[in-house]
Length: 548
Ligand code: ATP
Ligand code: MG
Image 1 (cartoon, helix red, strand yellow):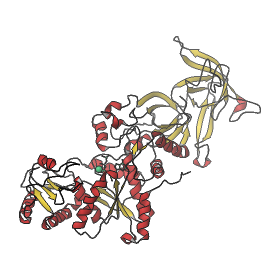
Image 2 (image 1 turned 180 degrees about the horizontal axis):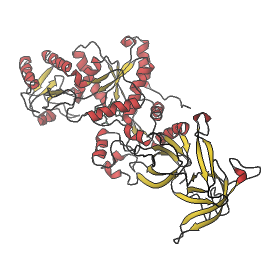
Image 3 (image 1 turned 180 degrees about the vertical axis):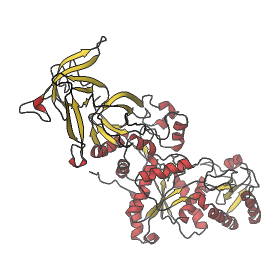
């Protein structure tokens, strides 16, 4: 496939430099650390491609780690979907880990912090902790419990671990600096009490570690060399480094932040996506309008196209929003090279060829891919009754009209040139049928000096399969839905149009996800709702020059 040059990636440069300097013993170990509290989306694709590509390129490896420290929001369904989606994208992790499997080690480190006088049990209310943390412009205030003795901290923390205290009554905090200009360093909470069972770790835990504390230690325990994350974690890096420094851990991964992916007309936030699903604005996580991996897969966007997209946008520290046309054209270019061609008529109009008898039948071998014979061919039946698109006829054609009109000839793709002799209408004046004749000398090519007007697609009425077409449009009608007061107000009411009674070439049922280029219409993927006698197709993306 023709590839555009790879875009800049400053992280690749850092790793190359590290390898040159013999850092990390020449190892490159990365991880992709999703929280299993939702389905993965296009933003995660960027992170997955980066982490796995860097590891692979430098002969290292990448782990998949479930960052599952929050017992309330995580579950097995999300975990299963994440594993499936990463594999589908074409990546294999070395180790499959759970942060919750590190709970025993994390607890050990917490005891070490207490013993070093670097962690204390705070018994302020959640509200007091919040207020006393200060603001961006004002320093925080020390907790009245900050100077508890190591012995007292040990006793209280043990009671917390043993489940002797109710939720919210105490927390364990790192003792850093309430006056720090960085709020993340103002004695961050590292453990909280939660009397809740954990879907993976079971129901023995009564205290749960917080994200920042867990993340750096999990990276360290896995010997991660480069911990790649998005820019919003930049201000958390001092805490990441503080924990590893004071515990004098044997390994100290380097956290490097890069800009998140944002795309026009698209919401990339699990919280919002959950809202779309639970409030039924879409039909589930894999609705083809969703920017989830599951949704994009169902829509027909190939994994290879997503990887190509990430390669093209590169990795930088500059936040920006990608134009939707750029995303769509990447998919279109990819599918143009990979998708087999088919003819499907979305709004059928009957054409009778009066020059052929009723029992006439021909079969053509048409290439699946006009530019590449190696991709095989399929047999296309032809008869005296056809369907064409109802807007491929004009009674009063404009200048340069390339389709059918009274007395005007047009080529049927891969077949004959036909001429329209008669237009038949119903009582309301709607066109119900065309009567045409074919020119037997024109099969497949024009004879000398012959000039047909244009080429239209068609299917044989006798042989065609009924199908359902689902045309998708942008889910939001505003380029940046999050700028609206409520992003739900910007949902496009016309994001899905279902068309029944479309006609497609007869063919054995294809696997869900198979994408075709329906000639002159766009790229369409077989939906899992398809049955043997009624395929359902999702429009993946329109053709650039799609006719309207
Ligand atoms: P969201 O912001 O959608 O709720 P999240 O950051 O909470 O996602 P995680 O499960 O924590 O989701 O994400 C796993 C990894 O994916 C993190 O390293 C995170 O930085 C990265 N990631 C999430 N969203 C994007 C994005 N839009 N672009 C690039 N990377 C992202
Ligand atoms: Mg997150």
